[in-house]
Length: 490
Image (cartoon, rainbow, N blue to C red; front, side, top):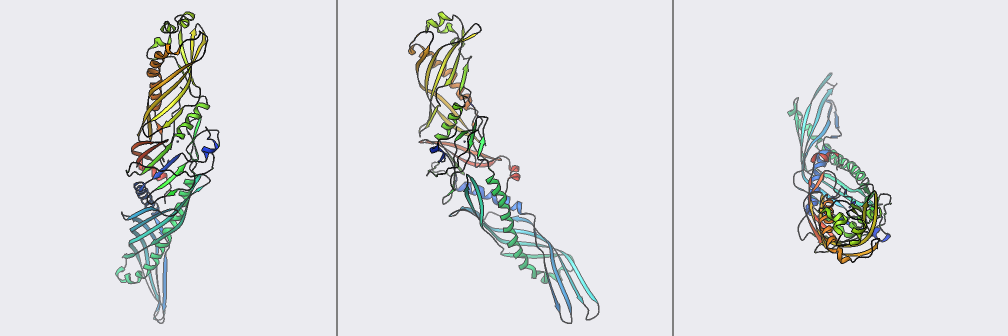
């Protein structure tokens, strides 16, 4: 059975013939980011934001005054650069009524600048005094807050900053060079100017950076090709749902033909995702419809076809091995080799319960005899197989393993006379257990790649099954921290 097993990488992370109109209106994959996941996201966002904001150039300032009979005084600060931010641990990311609120408190910053001073007088004769140097500035108790709204825009995610602010509590200037001790009081007059510059420029740069993140989100593919047959419909359904300490994203999630158009119809089903009380960063829920849509795609593409010419007991593929089971087969074609031409009569059906995962497979098995230079079809047997299995997860992949539960046989047509299915039931059972099940397990062993953003990997994944739904509970880790450089940050 030519089964394809290349399936996909993305945040979040996550799976898919064109869905029927009813199915297209619902999401079939839901990803819930819990409290620990939000804490992880907060550390990533704030840490990367701190790195992206530095170095940050701030506007300079100048003060001058003229004193009657004494002359004029001019002082200026320039080349003001915020070159280091230390966020610390006092920060939070929490869902609000309609968006995400990120607050970084207790932030400290280091700023460098140049200062200059000049005095001139013509009243007591030409006189000019000037001095200059550098200074370091320590900012403490800074608080930065941002509220971001994430909305569904035509099946993609759009991000908008509704509020962003910065507050500086303490700022202290330390002068270097020249007679700095003499000018300290004068330069301290710029404290409010520098504070105002920080409180203005930092939010402006954060808002500017979010536009890059917005472009990144809207640029996420709405359809991801897995091979030349199938694609995953990654259309987001409705707006994200905000809980007290979690966010839920719903994705269409059906497998589609690569030539099918992605539907944007939206409806939000009320899903209840649970990991048995455990606190996980990510909860990924997959409806059984997702898997059935994948099977349907490959079935309609004609990919579910398997020609069996080798088995563990090769005597099963020679008419001599059937001499006492179907005598007419041996008499008509003595000692000829055979192949089994297996194809799906209908798309396989997968079902999920709280106890296990199972599938019903309806296949046609044509017995072809290799007679001289000819391939002669002699009979077609309908085989309906019931199988069950388990799902395991490791990293960004889900693996499966199946075993035979039961099967039934019926003769569809024959050129070697009628024969009772009970005669061949034992042989078929051996064939299913020694050839078909191992083949399916070898395909399932390749793994099903979950949609996770590049650079991240799932960690400590475990699987829970419930009625018509498979849920994966996981934490998240960096697969390659250096890959964050290529991601847009706040």
